[in-house]
Image 1 (tube, one colour):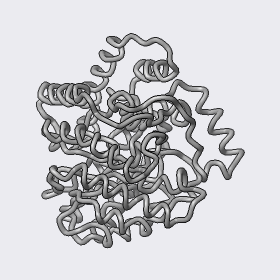
Image 2: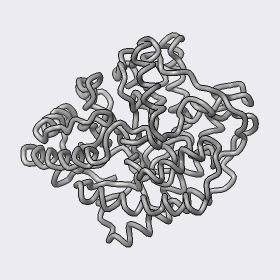
Image 3: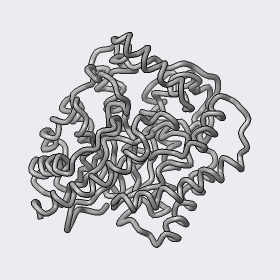
Image 4: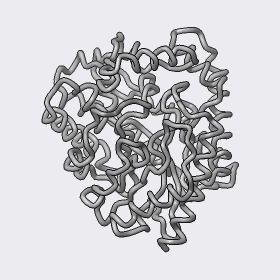
Length: 387
C-alpha cells in the first residue's frame, strides 16, 4: 500500500456515477425484466474504460474501476454466492423512520428515477453459503487490468472493492444457519475466494464495511448498544479469518454510517466502535470526515491508526452537490495529519461512493468530477504546508 511519501495522494471509496443507459439496464434487471446479457456486459465494460480516464483527468492518484460492472457495491454478490433464494424486505433506517415527512419525500423522490432497490427483493440464505465459481471476479479483474494497460497504467496504485461478511449478512436473511457466528464464518469463508482473486490480480483490496457503523441504526436499532458491539467484534473475527493469508498492507477497510442524505442523528459514535476496528488486521482505514455529522471525529484517529497503518480521510461529501473549497479540503487534511502525527500516512478521499447503488447517487455527475478536481487542488495546498 502506497504512502504519501512526497505529497498527499488522492483516492476515493469506490463507486462512481454510471452512465444513464447502464443504470437503466441494471434497474430493469433488478425489477425482473428481461435484459440482454451481452448488451449489459458491453455497456459495463465501456463504462469501466471511460471511468479510468475521468479519474485521471480529475487528479485521482489511486483509482479503481468505479464498480461500473456491478449494480452496486454489494448486491452483485447475489450472483456469485450459492445457497441463496427467496426474498424479504429489509427495514428502513431508524433515523429516517423517525422523520415521517422526510421519509415520505425521500421515497417519492426515489421513485422518480431509474434505480436498483436497496430495501425490497433481498435474498435469504436457504442453504450452505458457497462461492462456487470465481470466473466473474477474475473476469472483472482481467478487464480492469487490460484497461489499465491500454491507458498506460496511469494510477500510482489501483484497488478493487468487495463487501465484508457483516454487510452481506445485513442484506441476506439467515434461514439456514440460525446462528450469527456460524453465518458470518460461512460468509467469510466464501468471500475469501473473491478477496484472494483481487489480490492475486495485483490490486489492493478495499473491504467495504458500512455494517460496522451503519447497522447500529438499522439491524440493531431496537437493541442495546452491547449487542451491536458484539456483532462488530464477530464481524472483525470473520474478516480476520477471511484475509488470514493476505498481507495486511494489501488491505484497507472502509467504514461509514450509510451513504445517504438523512438525519444521521442515531449514528453510533466513532469512538464507540474503535475498540473492535482496531482489531482488524488491515493496513489502513477509509473513514468519512466531510459530512456534518462526523466531521469532528478525526480527533479520535490517534486512538485508531497504528504506526504501520494509513488513513484515507474523507474530505469531500458524497451526498451533497456543494463543491468543497480547496482551502477547506486542505484544512481537513492538515487536521488529520496533525492528529496522527505523520502526513506520509494520510491520503485524501471521499466520504463514501458517489453511486454505491445504481441510480441512487445524489450528486450530479459533473459535480462529482468538480469535487474530485477540488480535492486534488486541496491536496496540493496541504502538501505545500505539510512537506
